[in-house]
Length: 271
Image (cartoon, rainbow, N blue to C red; front, side, top):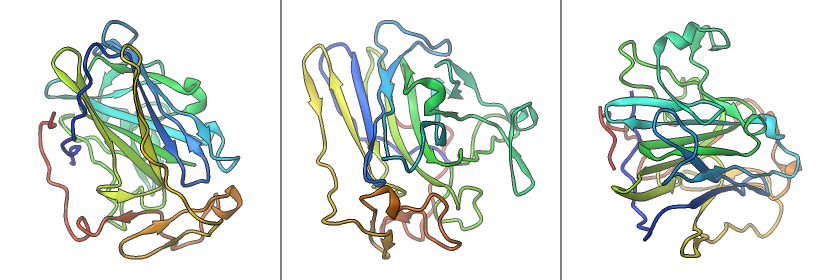
């Protein structure tokens, strides 16, 4: 069972009405995220919460109903939880693998811990306390995540394992940690680990007017997906990115530093 990597903190003064936007550029467009408020296990609004917004600008390659979101983290120390479509957090449970509406792939059952961008209307609330948070975004399919029998851990998609149930799923993720009044917001996209499709993030604090907007990746012309051991390039038009890739087509690239390595397991996330 894997645990999210340590985050690189971004310290923002003052209270947090923040907006975090994640942009999908790989499909020649933008798909934004922004967190709204949730309070602990109960979710909902409140002081110290912020919105996470997802904007689909894939130019028709994927509809909102085809963009899946899975958000996991520890809102209570030692207990992993996942976000439901209404923004509340629920403890992970291996029994959900056999509950109504569960996922099945290659004869194996998995909990359904995802929702689509269409179902949430583009915005969900972030808990006021979350450590080791991961927001998986997948295109055309949810990610398949097993939960340990003791409900203390979950199996992250492994881009280095060709037999992983997510090997044929386009996915990427965003990592973040935030505890209102204790731990400043820290987050990053996962291009430090692997590349599924281009993502950037925007963090905005309304009280101070602060806004971060990383430079967008640029491609000089429309291309078909290509890759090497150290890089991948993405198309600039929806037509250049097939909704159903040919068999054997690589859906992601691990960074050279991560190739041939394994993600260490841990029982507690890093702040």
